[in-house]
Image (cartoon, rainbow over all chains, first blue to last red; front, side):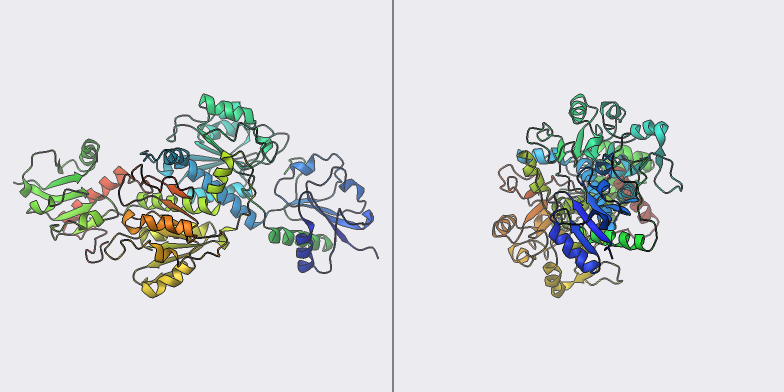
Length: 317
Length: 317
Protein backbone atom coordinates (compact mmCIF):
# COMPACT_ATOMS: atom_id res chain seq x y z
CA UNK A 1 0.00 0.00 0.00
CA UNK A 2 1.31 3.46 -0.90
CA UNK A 3 1.32 5.65 2.26
CA UNK A 4 -0.69 8.90 2.35
CA UNK A 5 2.27 11.17 2.84
CA UNK A 6 2.45 14.86 3.79
CA UNK A 7 5.24 16.84 2.15
CA UNK A 8 6.49 19.75 4.25
CA UNK A 9 8.01 22.32 1.89
CA UNK A 10 8.65 25.49 3.89
CA UNK A 11 11.58 27.54 2.65
CA UNK A 12 13.94 28.79 5.32
CA UNK A 13 12.28 26.89 8.18
CA UNK A 14 14.07 24.25 10.23
CA UNK A 15 12.32 20.92 9.58
CA UNK A 16 13.04 19.00 12.79
CA UNK A 17 10.78 20.94 15.21
CA UNK A 18 7.95 20.61 12.68
CA UNK A 19 8.46 16.88 12.25
CA UNK A 20 8.37 16.58 16.05
CA UNK A 21 5.06 18.42 16.20
CA UNK A 22 3.49 16.32 13.45
CA UNK A 23 4.67 13.11 15.15
CA UNK A 24 3.06 14.27 18.37
CA UNK A 25 -0.21 15.49 16.82
CA UNK A 26 -0.67 12.70 14.25
CA UNK A 27 1.64 9.75 14.94
CA UNK A 28 0.20 7.74 12.03
CA UNK A 29 0.86 10.43 9.41
CA UNK A 30 4.00 9.99 7.33
CA UNK A 31 5.73 13.35 6.82
CA UNK A 32 8.69 14.02 4.50
CA UNK A 33 10.66 17.13 3.62
CA UNK A 34 12.51 18.16 0.48
CA UNK A 35 15.69 16.81 2.06
CA UNK A 36 14.22 13.29 2.16
CA UNK A 37 13.99 10.74 -0.64
CA UNK A 38 10.34 10.16 -1.45
CA UNK A 39 8.18 8.82 -4.26
CA UNK A 40 6.28 11.79 -5.77
CA UNK A 41 3.27 9.49 -6.21
CA UNK A 42 2.94 9.00 -2.44
CA UNK A 43 2.45 12.69 -1.64
CA UNK A 44 -1.21 13.41 -0.96
CA UNK A 45 -0.89 16.69 1.01
CA UNK A 46 1.58 19.54 0.87
CA UNK A 47 2.15 22.02 3.71
CA UNK A 48 3.96 24.93 2.10
CA UNK A 49 5.64 28.25 2.67
CA UNK A 50 7.17 29.69 -0.52
CA UNK A 51 7.94 26.25 -2.03
CA UNK A 52 10.24 26.01 -5.08
CA UNK A 53 8.38 27.00 -8.27
CA UNK A 54 7.26 23.90 -10.17
CA UNK A 55 7.62 21.54 -7.19
CA UNK A 56 3.94 20.94 -6.56
CA UNK A 57 3.32 20.13 -10.26
CA UNK A 58 5.60 17.08 -9.86
CA UNK A 59 3.17 15.40 -7.44
CA UNK A 60 0.60 13.42 -9.48
CA UNK A 61 -1.61 12.36 -6.55
CA UNK A 62 -1.69 15.65 -4.61
CA UNK A 63 -5.13 16.19 -3.04
CA UNK A 64 -4.66 19.43 -1.09
CA UNK A 65 -2.22 22.27 -0.44
CA UNK A 66 -2.17 23.92 2.98
CA UNK A 67 -0.36 27.26 2.99
CA UNK A 68 1.36 27.98 6.30
CA UNK A 69 0.56 31.72 6.27
CA UNK A 70 -2.39 33.99 5.63
CA UNK A 71 -0.99 35.34 2.33
CA UNK A 72 -0.94 33.02 -0.70
CA UNK A 73 0.56 35.56 -3.12
CA UNK A 74 3.94 33.79 -3.30
CA UNK A 75 2.23 30.47 -4.09
CA UNK A 76 -0.08 31.90 -6.76
CA UNK A 77 2.82 33.27 -8.81
CA UNK A 78 3.66 29.62 -9.68
CA UNK A 79 1.96 29.15 -13.08
CA UNK A 80 2.31 25.36 -12.74
CA UNK A 81 0.43 25.21 -9.42
CA UNK A 82 -1.83 22.12 -9.61
CA UNK A 83 -5.56 22.72 -9.54
CA UNK A 84 -6.29 21.13 -6.16
CA UNK A 85 -7.98 22.72 -3.12
CA UNK A 86 -5.72 25.29 -1.46
CA UNK A 87 -6.21 26.45 2.14
CA UNK A 88 -4.50 29.26 4.02
CA UNK A 89 -3.94 29.36 7.75
CA UNK A 90 -6.36 31.40 9.82
CA UNK A 91 -5.87 30.79 13.50
CA UNK A 92 -6.85 32.76 16.59
CA UNK A 93 -3.25 33.16 17.73
CA UNK A 94 -2.21 34.76 14.43
CA UNK A 95 -5.32 36.95 14.48
CA UNK A 96 -4.66 38.22 18.00
CA UNK A 97 -1.01 38.98 17.23
CA UNK A 98 -1.95 41.00 14.15
CA UNK A 99 -4.65 42.82 16.12
CA UNK A 100 -2.15 43.68 18.88
CA UNK A 101 0.39 44.98 16.32
CA UNK A 102 -2.22 47.27 14.79
CA UNK A 103 -3.35 48.53 18.22
CA UNK A 104 0.27 49.24 19.24
CA UNK A 105 1.07 51.25 16.12
CA UNK A 106 -2.22 53.16 16.07
CA UNK A 107 -1.63 54.19 19.70
CA UNK A 108 2.03 54.96 18.96
CA UNK A 109 1.09 57.48 16.28
CA UNK A 110 -1.96 58.72 18.16
CA UNK A 111 0.37 59.57 21.05
CA UNK A 112 3.02 61.02 18.67
CA UNK A 113 5.65 58.77 20.18
CA UNK A 114 8.04 59.81 17.40
CA UNK A 115 8.06 63.36 18.79
CA UNK A 116 8.15 62.14 22.40
CA UNK A 117 11.16 59.92 21.66
CA UNK A 118 12.97 62.72 19.80
CA UNK A 119 12.38 65.04 22.78
CA UNK A 120 13.71 62.37 25.14
CA UNK A 121 16.94 62.12 23.14
CA UNK A 122 17.34 65.88 23.72
CA UNK A 123 16.37 65.64 27.44
CA UNK A 124 13.43 67.87 26.58
CA UNK A 125 10.03 67.87 28.33
CA UNK A 126 7.58 68.10 25.44
CA UNK A 127 4.13 69.57 25.89
CA UNK A 128 1.77 68.45 23.16
CA UNK A 129 -1.98 68.47 23.03
CA UNK A 130 -3.23 64.92 23.10
CA UNK A 131 -6.39 64.47 21.04
CA UNK A 132 -8.94 62.02 22.40
CA UNK A 133 -9.12 58.70 20.54
CA UNK A 134 -12.67 59.53 19.45
CA UNK A 135 -11.27 62.43 17.42
CA UNK A 136 -9.02 60.11 15.39
CA UNK A 137 -10.49 58.31 12.38
CA UNK A 138 -8.86 54.95 11.70
CA UNK A 139 -9.46 53.15 8.40
CA UNK A 140 -8.83 49.43 7.98
CA UNK A 141 -8.05 48.82 4.30
CA UNK A 142 -8.79 45.11 3.84
CA UNK A 143 -11.61 44.20 6.15
CA UNK A 144 -11.32 40.43 6.40
CA UNK A 145 -10.83 38.26 9.45
CA UNK A 146 -7.73 40.12 10.69
CA UNK A 147 -9.09 43.56 9.82
CA UNK A 148 -12.33 43.00 11.68
CA UNK A 149 -10.45 41.87 14.80
CA UNK A 150 -8.22 44.94 14.72
CA UNK A 151 -11.20 47.22 14.12
CA UNK A 152 -13.12 45.81 17.07
CA UNK A 153 -10.16 46.31 19.44
CA UNK A 154 -9.58 49.89 18.23
CA UNK A 155 -13.26 50.76 18.55
CA UNK A 156 -13.10 49.39 22.10
CA UNK A 157 -10.26 51.85 22.82
CA UNK A 158 -12.45 54.71 21.62
CA UNK A 159 -11.18 55.28 18.07
CA UNK A 160 -13.54 56.23 15.24
CA UNK A 161 -13.05 53.16 13.02
CA UNK A 162 -14.24 52.24 9.54
CA UNK A 163 -13.25 49.48 7.14
CA UNK A 164 -13.00 48.95 3.42
CA UNK A 165 -13.39 45.63 1.63
CA UNK A 166 -13.38 44.68 -2.03
CA UNK A 167 -16.93 43.36 -2.00
CA UNK A 168 -19.84 44.54 0.16
CA UNK A 169 -20.25 42.76 3.52
CA UNK A 170 -23.19 40.38 3.73
CA UNK A 171 -24.14 41.41 7.27
CA UNK A 172 -23.85 44.87 8.81
CA UNK A 173 -21.94 45.19 12.10
CA UNK A 174 -21.19 48.10 14.42
CA UNK A 175 -18.20 49.21 12.28
CA UNK A 176 -19.10 50.94 8.99
CA UNK A 177 -17.50 49.09 6.08
CA UNK A 178 -17.11 50.79 2.69
CA UNK A 179 -16.61 48.69 -0.42
CA UNK A 180 -15.75 48.80 -4.07
CA UNK A 181 -14.00 51.49 -6.07
CA UNK A 182 -16.75 54.03 -5.36
CA UNK A 183 -16.51 53.48 -1.59
CA UNK A 184 -12.73 53.79 -1.56
CA UNK A 185 -12.48 57.58 -1.97
CA UNK A 186 -14.99 58.24 0.80
CA UNK A 187 -13.16 55.77 3.01
CA UNK A 188 -9.73 57.30 2.34
CA UNK A 189 -10.99 60.84 2.90
CA UNK A 190 -11.96 59.87 6.47
CA UNK A 191 -8.82 57.87 7.38
CA UNK A 192 -6.45 59.84 9.63
CA UNK A 193 -4.67 56.54 10.26
CA UNK A 194 -4.80 54.07 7.36
CA UNK A 195 -4.07 50.45 8.26
CA UNK A 196 -3.32 48.24 5.23
CA UNK A 197 -4.20 44.58 5.71
CA UNK A 198 -5.01 43.71 2.08
CA UNK A 199 -3.91 40.48 0.44
CA UNK A 200 -1.39 40.93 -2.37
CA UNK A 201 -3.10 40.32 -5.72
CA UNK A 202 -2.59 41.77 -9.22
CA UNK A 203 -5.33 44.25 -8.28
CA UNK A 204 -3.72 45.42 -5.01
CA UNK A 205 -0.04 45.45 -6.05
CA UNK A 206 1.25 49.00 -5.60
CA UNK A 207 -2.10 50.29 -4.33
CA UNK A 208 -0.34 52.25 -1.53
CA UNK A 209 0.99 54.88 -3.89
CA UNK A 210 1.10 58.63 -4.16
CA UNK A 211 -2.36 58.92 -5.75
CA UNK A 212 -3.87 57.07 -2.81
CA UNK A 213 -1.89 59.00 -0.18
CA UNK A 214 -3.13 62.26 -1.69
CA UNK A 215 -6.70 61.20 -0.96
CA UNK A 216 -6.00 60.97 2.78
CA UNK A 217 -7.09 63.94 4.92
CA UNK A 218 -4.54 66.54 5.98
CA UNK A 219 -6.86 68.34 8.36
CA UNK A 220 -7.26 65.65 11.00
CA UNK A 221 -6.40 66.22 14.66
CA UNK A 222 -2.99 64.55 14.26
CA UNK A 223 -1.97 67.18 11.71
CA UNK A 224 -1.66 64.70 8.86
CA UNK A 225 -2.30 61.13 7.79
CA UNK A 226 -0.50 58.04 9.04
CA UNK A 227 0.09 54.80 7.12
CA UNK A 228 0.44 51.44 8.86
CA UNK A 229 1.25 48.59 6.47
CA UNK A 230 1.04 45.20 8.14
CA UNK A 231 -0.22 43.46 4.99
CA UNK A 232 2.28 42.78 2.22
CA UNK A 233 5.33 44.70 1.01
CA UNK A 234 4.10 44.52 -2.58
CA UNK A 235 1.11 46.70 -1.68
CA UNK A 236 3.34 49.73 -1.24
CA UNK A 237 5.46 51.86 -3.54
CA UNK A 238 8.34 52.67 -1.22
CA UNK A 239 9.53 55.74 -3.15
CA UNK A 240 5.98 57.14 -3.00
CA UNK A 241 5.89 56.76 0.78
CA UNK A 242 9.03 58.88 1.08
CA UNK A 243 7.68 61.43 -1.41
CA UNK A 244 4.33 61.59 0.42
CA UNK A 245 6.13 62.19 3.74
CA UNK A 246 8.09 65.01 2.11
CA UNK A 247 5.10 66.69 0.50
CA UNK A 248 2.86 66.32 3.56
CA UNK A 249 0.40 63.78 2.16
CA UNK A 250 1.69 61.50 4.92
CA UNK A 251 2.68 62.56 8.42
CA UNK A 252 4.25 59.27 9.53
CA UNK A 253 4.29 55.54 8.83
CA UNK A 254 4.79 52.16 10.46
CA UNK A 255 5.95 49.52 8.01
CA UNK A 256 6.22 45.83 8.85
CA UNK A 257 6.54 44.51 5.30
CA UNK A 258 8.71 45.41 2.32
CA UNK A 259 9.10 44.60 -1.34
CA UNK A 260 12.38 42.83 -0.56
CA UNK A 261 12.91 41.28 2.86
CA UNK A 262 14.98 41.62 4.87
CA UNK A 263 15.04 45.32 4.03
CA UNK A 264 18.58 46.12 2.84
CA UNK A 265 20.76 48.47 4.93
CA UNK A 266 20.92 50.90 1.98
CA UNK A 267 17.15 51.58 2.06
CA UNK A 268 16.33 55.25 2.82
CA UNK A 269 13.27 54.05 4.76
CA UNK A 270 15.43 53.16 7.79
CA UNK A 271 16.60 56.66 8.54
CA UNK A 272 13.43 58.66 7.94
CA UNK A 273 12.55 60.19 11.34
CA UNK A 274 8.84 59.60 10.87
CA UNK A 275 8.98 55.98 9.71
CA UNK A 276 8.88 53.10 12.17
CA UNK A 277 10.38 49.92 10.69
CA UNK A 278 9.47 46.56 12.21
CA UNK A 279 11.05 43.36 10.86
CA UNK A 280 7.95 41.59 9.42
CA UNK A 281 6.97 40.32 12.85
CA UNK A 282 3.50 41.81 13.17
CA UNK A 283 2.06 38.33 13.39
CA UNK A 284 4.60 35.57 13.80
CA UNK A 285 2.75 32.31 13.47
CA UNK A 286 2.64 29.99 16.44
CA UNK A 287 4.08 26.68 15.15
CA UNK A 288 1.80 24.66 17.44
CA UNK A 289 -1.28 26.32 16.01
CA UNK A 290 -0.05 25.95 12.41
CA UNK A 291 0.77 22.27 12.80
CA UNK A 292 -2.64 21.67 14.35
CA UNK A 293 -4.31 23.41 11.42
CA UNK A 294 -2.40 21.26 8.92
CA UNK A 295 -3.29 18.02 10.70
CA UNK A 296 -6.93 19.08 10.87
CA UNK A 297 -7.00 19.72 7.09
CA UNK A 298 -5.44 16.32 6.40
CA UNK A 299 -8.19 14.75 8.50
CA UNK A 300 -10.85 16.72 6.65
CA UNK A 301 -9.56 15.60 3.24
CA UNK A 302 -9.48 11.98 4.41
CA UNK A 303 -13.06 12.34 5.66
CA UNK A 304 -14.19 13.86 2.36
CA UNK A 305 -14.83 17.27 3.93
CA UNK A 306 -13.85 20.58 2.27
CA UNK A 307 -10.77 22.43 3.51
CA UNK A 308 -11.19 25.30 5.96
CA UNK A 309 -10.24 28.80 4.70
CA UNK A 310 -10.31 27.69 1.10
CA UNK A 311 -8.57 30.16 -1.22
CA UNK A 312 -10.45 31.58 -4.21
CA UNK A 313 -7.61 31.65 -6.76
CA UNK A 314 -9.46 34.11 -8.98
CA UNK A 315 -9.56 36.64 -6.11
CA UNK A 316 -6.10 35.71 -4.86
CA UNK A 317 -7.09 35.15 -1.21
CA UNK B 1 -27.87 88.95 48.32
CA UNK B 2 -24.36 87.48 48.32
CA UNK B 3 -23.85 85.46 45.11
CA UNK B 4 -22.94 81.77 45.28
CA UNK B 5 -19.59 82.12 43.62
CA UNK B 6 -17.21 79.48 42.26
CA UNK B 7 -13.51 80.21 42.69
CA UNK B 8 -11.32 78.69 39.97
CA UNK B 9 -7.83 78.26 41.46
CA UNK B 10 -5.83 76.14 39.00
CA UNK B 11 -2.10 76.87 39.02
CA UNK B 12 -0.54 77.22 35.60
CA UNK B 13 -3.78 77.03 33.64
CA UNK B 14 -5.08 79.84 31.45
CA UNK B 15 -8.31 81.08 33.00
CA UNK B 16 -10.14 82.49 29.98
CA UNK B 17 -11.01 79.21 28.19
CA UNK B 18 -12.33 77.87 31.50
CA UNK B 19 -14.45 80.94 32.17
CA UNK B 20 -15.88 80.53 28.65
CA UNK B 21 -16.81 76.94 29.35
CA UNK B 22 -18.45 77.75 32.68
CA UNK B 23 -20.43 80.60 31.06
CA UNK B 24 -21.66 78.20 28.42
CA UNK B 25 -22.47 75.31 30.77
CA UNK B 26 -23.92 77.34 33.66
CA UNK B 27 -24.66 80.94 32.60
CA UNK B 28 -26.11 81.80 36.03
CA UNK B 29 -23.02 80.72 37.97
CA UNK B 30 -20.64 83.50 38.98
CA UNK B 31 -17.03 82.37 38.53
CA UNK B 32 -13.93 84.25 39.70
CA UNK B 33 -10.23 83.52 39.57
CA UNK B 34 -7.33 84.50 41.82
CA UNK B 35 -6.65 87.42 39.47
CA UNK B 36 -10.08 88.90 40.24
CA UNK B 37 -11.14 90.97 43.24
CA UNK B 38 -13.69 89.00 45.21
CA UNK B 39 -15.17 88.87 48.67
CA UNK B 40 -13.90 85.66 50.39
CA UNK B 41 -17.33 85.31 52.00
CA UNK B 42 -19.04 84.91 48.62
CA UNK B 43 -17.05 81.80 47.61
CA UNK B 44 -19.16 78.68 48.05
CA UNK B 45 -17.29 76.27 45.74
CA UNK B 46 -13.65 75.96 44.76
CA UNK B 47 -12.43 74.18 41.63
CA UNK B 48 -8.73 73.58 42.24
CA UNK B 49 -5.52 72.27 40.79
CA UNK B 50 -2.56 72.75 43.13
CA UNK B 51 -3.95 75.95 44.70
CA UNK B 52 -1.69 78.15 46.87
CA UNK B 53 -1.26 76.62 50.35
CA UNK B 54 -3.57 78.34 52.84
CA UNK B 55 -5.84 79.84 50.19
CA UNK B 56 -8.87 77.64 50.84
CA UNK B 57 -8.71 78.34 54.61
CA UNK B 58 -9.46 82.01 53.86
CA UNK B 59 -12.94 81.19 52.53
CA UNK B 60 -15.37 81.14 55.50
CA UNK B 61 -18.43 79.95 53.55
CA UNK B 62 -16.80 77.27 51.40
CA UNK B 63 -19.16 74.31 50.94
CA UNK B 64 -17.22 72.03 48.59
CA UNK B 65 -13.86 71.59 46.88
CA UNK B 66 -13.71 69.95 43.46
CA UNK B 67 -10.22 68.80 42.51
CA UNK B 68 -9.60 69.00 38.76
CA UNK B 69 -7.54 65.80 38.61
CA UNK B 70 -7.70 62.24 39.89
CA UNK B 71 -4.84 62.70 42.39
CA UNK B 72 -5.49 64.82 45.50
CA UNK B 73 -2.02 64.39 47.02
CA UNK B 74 -0.97 68.00 46.31
CA UNK B 75 -4.13 69.30 47.98
CA UNK B 76 -3.85 67.09 51.06
CA UNK B 77 -0.39 68.42 51.93
CA UNK B 78 -2.10 71.71 52.88
CA UNK B 79 -2.51 71.39 56.67
CA UNK B 80 -5.00 74.26 56.67
CA UNK B 81 -7.34 72.59 54.16
CA UNK B 82 -10.89 73.27 55.40
CA UNK B 83 -12.94 70.28 56.45
CA UNK B 84 -15.56 70.43 53.69
CA UNK B 85 -16.49 67.70 51.20
CA UNK B 86 -13.74 67.18 48.62
CA UNK B 87 -14.34 65.49 45.27
CA UNK B 88 -11.85 64.40 42.63
CA UNK B 89 -12.58 64.18 38.94
CA UNK B 90 -13.38 60.77 37.55
CA UNK B 91 -14.63 61.03 34.02
CA UNK B 92 -14.88 58.52 31.20
CA UNK B 93 -12.59 60.57 28.97
CA UNK B 94 -9.80 60.60 31.56
CA UNK B 95 -10.31 56.88 32.22
CA UNK B 96 -10.09 55.97 28.54
CA UNK B 97 -6.93 58.05 28.05
CA UNK B 98 -5.21 56.37 30.97
CA UNK B 99 -6.33 52.95 29.73
CA UNK B 100 -4.95 53.70 26.25
CA UNK B 101 -1.62 54.87 27.72
CA UNK B 102 -1.25 51.64 29.66
CA UNK B 103 -2.18 49.53 26.63
CA UNK B 104 0.35 51.39 24.45
CA UNK B 105 3.22 50.92 26.88
CA UNK B 106 2.43 47.29 27.69
CA UNK B 107 2.40 46.50 23.96
CA UNK B 108 5.55 48.59 23.44
CA UNK B 109 7.51 46.50 25.91
CA UNK B 110 5.81 43.25 24.94
CA UNK B 111 7.00 43.88 21.38
CA UNK B 112 10.48 44.99 22.59
CA UNK B 113 10.15 48.24 20.65
CA UNK B 114 13.30 49.51 22.40
CA UNK B 115 15.34 46.82 20.62
CA UNK B 116 13.42 47.28 17.37
CA UNK B 117 14.07 51.04 17.41
CA UNK B 118 17.77 50.54 18.23
CA UNK B 119 18.06 48.11 15.32
CA UNK B 120 16.35 50.62 13.03
CA UNK B 121 18.91 53.28 13.93
CA UNK B 122 21.58 50.82 12.77
CA UNK B 123 19.63 49.84 9.61
CA UNK B 124 19.52 46.34 11.01
CA UNK B 125 16.76 43.77 10.43
CA UNK B 126 16.21 42.26 13.86
CA UNK B 127 14.84 38.77 14.33
CA UNK B 128 13.38 38.27 17.77
CA UNK B 129 10.99 35.69 19.06
CA UNK B 130 7.71 37.33 19.85
CA UNK B 131 5.98 35.73 22.84
CA UNK B 132 2.20 35.51 22.66
CA UNK B 133 0.36 38.00 24.92
CA UNK B 134 -1.03 35.11 26.94
CA UNK B 135 2.53 34.27 28.05
CA UNK B 136 3.01 37.75 29.56
CA UNK B 137 1.74 38.43 33.08
CA UNK B 138 0.68 42.02 33.64
CA UNK B 139 0.08 43.31 37.18
CA UNK B 140 -1.97 46.46 37.86
CA UNK B 141 -0.74 47.92 41.15
CA UNK B 142 -3.64 50.11 42.28
CA UNK B 143 -6.83 48.48 41.10
CA UNK B 144 -9.32 51.33 41.24
CA UNK B 145 -11.46 52.80 38.50
CA UNK B 146 -8.52 53.48 36.15
CA UNK B 147 -6.76 50.21 36.94
CA UNK B 148 -9.84 48.11 36.27
CA UNK B 149 -10.36 49.82 32.89
CA UNK B 150 -6.74 49.17 31.88
CA UNK B 151 -6.93 45.56 33.08
CA UNK B 152 -10.07 44.86 31.08
CA UNK B 153 -8.53 46.24 27.87
CA UNK B 154 -5.30 44.25 28.37
CA UNK B 155 -7.19 41.05 29.11
CA UNK B 156 -9.14 41.65 25.89
CA UNK B 157 -5.83 41.77 24.01
CA UNK B 158 -4.90 38.39 25.45
CA UNK B 159 -2.56 39.34 28.32
CA UNK B 160 -2.56 37.41 31.60
CA UNK B 161 -3.69 40.21 33.93
CA UNK B 162 -4.02 40.51 37.72
CA UNK B 163 -4.55 43.47 40.01
CA UNK B 164 -3.60 44.53 43.51
CA UNK B 165 -5.60 46.84 45.73
CA UNK B 166 -5.13 48.04 49.30
CA UNK B 167 -8.36 46.51 50.55
CA UNK B 168 -10.11 43.36 49.28
CA UNK B 169 -12.63 43.89 46.47
CA UNK B 170 -16.24 43.51 47.46
CA UNK B 171 -17.24 41.65 44.30
CA UNK B 172 -15.13 39.18 42.31
CA UNK B 173 -14.70 39.84 38.59
CA UNK B 174 -12.93 37.99 35.80
CA UNK B 175 -9.54 39.56 36.74
CA UNK B 176 -7.92 38.15 39.90
CA UNK B 177 -7.26 40.95 42.39
CA UNK B 178 -4.79 40.48 45.23
CA UNK B 179 -4.94 42.73 48.28
CA UNK B 180 -3.18 43.75 51.44
CA UNK B 181 0.44 43.30 52.44
CA UNK B 182 0.18 39.51 52.31
CA UNK B 183 -1.19 39.55 48.76
CA UNK B 184 1.47 41.93 47.51
CA UNK B 185 4.40 39.46 47.32
CA UNK B 186 2.35 36.89 45.40
CA UNK B 187 1.15 39.63 43.07
CA UNK B 188 4.65 40.99 42.45
CA UNK B 189 6.12 37.53 41.85
CA UNK B 190 3.71 37.07 38.90
CA UNK B 191 4.08 40.54 37.33
CA UNK B 192 6.30 40.48 34.23
CA UNK B 193 4.97 43.97 33.50
CA UNK B 194 4.08 46.02 36.58
CA UNK B 195 1.75 48.98 35.99
CA UNK B 196 1.66 51.48 38.89
CA UNK B 197 -1.62 53.41 39.17
CA UNK B 198 -1.62 53.96 42.95
CA UNK B 199 -2.63 57.24 44.55
CA UNK B 200 0.19 59.04 46.36
CA UNK B 201 -0.33 58.76 50.11
CA UNK B 202 2.09 58.56 53.07
CA UNK B 203 1.74 54.76 52.72
CA UNK B 204 2.60 54.60 49.01
CA UNK B 205 5.34 57.23 48.82
CA UNK B 206 8.52 55.55 47.56
CA UNK B 207 6.82 52.15 47.24
CA UNK B 208 8.46 51.61 43.83
CA UNK B 209 11.89 50.95 45.29
CA UNK B 210 14.64 48.40 45.04
CA UNK B 211 13.08 46.02 47.55
CA UNK B 212 9.91 45.90 45.50
CA UNK B 213 11.72 45.55 42.16
CA UNK B 214 13.64 42.58 43.55
CA UNK B 215 10.33 40.76 44.11
CA UNK B 216 9.48 40.91 40.39
CA UNK B 217 10.17 37.77 38.33
CA UNK B 218 13.31 37.54 36.20
CA UNK B 219 12.32 34.33 34.45
CA UNK B 220 9.35 35.62 32.43
CA UNK B 221 9.18 35.32 28.64
CA UNK B 222 10.36 38.92 28.18
CA UNK B 223 13.64 38.10 29.93
CA UNK B 224 13.02 40.45 32.84
CA UNK B 225 10.46 42.69 34.52
CA UNK B 226 9.09 45.96 33.16
CA UNK B 227 7.82 48.93 35.21
CA UNK B 228 5.19 51.32 33.88
CA UNK B 229 4.49 54.23 36.25
CA UNK B 230 1.49 56.27 35.19
CA UNK B 231 0.43 57.07 38.76
CA UNK B 232 2.48 59.63 40.66
CA UNK B 233 6.16 60.53 40.62
CA UNK B 234 6.32 60.31 44.41
CA UNK B 235 5.61 56.57 44.20
CA UNK B 236 9.04 55.89 42.72
CA UNK B 237 12.61 56.16 43.97
CA UNK B 238 14.33 57.26 40.78
CA UNK B 239 17.82 56.15 41.82
CA UNK B 240 16.44 52.70 42.62
CA UNK B 241 14.94 52.40 39.13
CA UNK B 242 18.36 53.02 37.61
CA UNK B 243 20.02 50.61 40.03
CA UNK B 244 17.38 47.94 39.33
CA UNK B 245 17.91 48.31 35.57
CA UNK B 246 21.65 47.88 36.13
CA UNK B 247 21.39 44.84 38.37
CA UNK B 248 18.73 43.15 36.23
CA UNK B 249 15.80 43.43 38.63
CA UNK B 250 14.20 45.58 35.92
CA UNK B 251 14.51 45.04 32.19
CA UNK B 252 12.89 48.30 31.09
CA UNK B 253 10.55 51.07 32.21
CA UNK B 254 8.04 53.61 30.93
CA UNK B 255 7.73 56.62 33.23
CA UNK B 256 5.08 59.31 32.82
CA UNK B 257 5.50 60.94 36.24
CA UNK B 258 8.45 62.21 38.26
CA UNK B 259 9.26 63.54 41.66
CA UNK B 260 9.94 66.97 40.14
CA UNK B 261 8.14 67.98 36.98
CA UNK B 262 9.11 68.91 34.39
CA UNK B 263 11.97 66.42 34.67
CA UNK B 264 15.20 68.45 34.61
CA UNK B 265 17.60 68.02 31.67
CA UNK B 266 20.30 66.79 34.08
CA UNK B 267 18.30 63.68 35.07
CA UNK B 268 20.08 60.42 34.16
CA UNK B 269 16.64 58.90 33.43
CA UNK B 270 16.49 60.62 30.02
CA UNK B 271 19.45 58.84 28.50
CA UNK B 272 18.95 55.31 29.79
CA UNK B 273 18.39 53.17 26.68
CA UNK B 274 15.69 51.07 28.33
CA UNK B 275 13.65 53.89 29.85
CA UNK B 276 10.82 55.54 27.93
CA UNK B 277 10.06 59.03 29.27
CA UNK B 278 6.67 60.58 28.55
CA UNK B 279 5.89 64.13 29.75
CA UNK B 280 3.11 63.44 32.28
CA UNK B 281 0.54 63.19 29.53
CA UNK B 282 -0.80 59.69 30.11
CA UNK B 283 -4.20 61.16 30.79
CA UNK B 284 -4.56 64.80 29.91
CA UNK B 285 -7.93 65.90 31.15
CA UNK B 286 -10.47 67.03 28.61
CA UNK B 287 -11.44 70.55 29.73
CA UNK B 288 -15.02 70.09 28.53
CA UNK B 289 -15.46 66.99 30.66
CA UNK B 290 -13.80 68.62 33.70
CA UNK B 291 -15.94 71.75 33.48
CA UNK B 292 -19.04 69.61 33.17
CA UNK B 293 -18.05 67.64 36.25
CA UNK B 294 -17.52 70.85 38.26
CA UNK B 295 -20.89 72.29 37.23
CA UNK B 296 -22.59 69.00 38.11
CA UNK B 297 -21.03 69.05 41.60
CA UNK B 298 -22.16 72.65 42.16
CA UNK B 299 -25.68 71.57 41.22
CA UNK B 300 -25.49 68.61 43.59
CA UNK B 301 -24.37 70.77 46.51
CA UNK B 302 -27.20 73.24 45.78
CA UNK B 303 -29.66 70.35 45.69
CA UNK B 304 -28.36 68.95 49.00
CA UNK B 305 -26.89 65.87 47.33
CA UNK B 306 -23.47 64.41 48.20
CA UNK B 307 -20.53 65.03 45.87
CA UNK B 308 -19.57 62.36 43.37
CA UNK B 309 -16.15 60.69 43.85
CA UNK B 310 -15.85 61.95 47.39
CA UNK B 311 -12.30 61.72 48.75
CA UNK B 312 -11.63 59.83 51.98
CA UNK B 313 -8.96 62.08 53.48
CA UNK B 314 -7.80 59.38 55.85
CA UNK B 315 -6.97 57.09 52.90
CA UNK B 316 -5.75 59.95 50.74
CA UNK B 317 -7.88 59.13 47.68
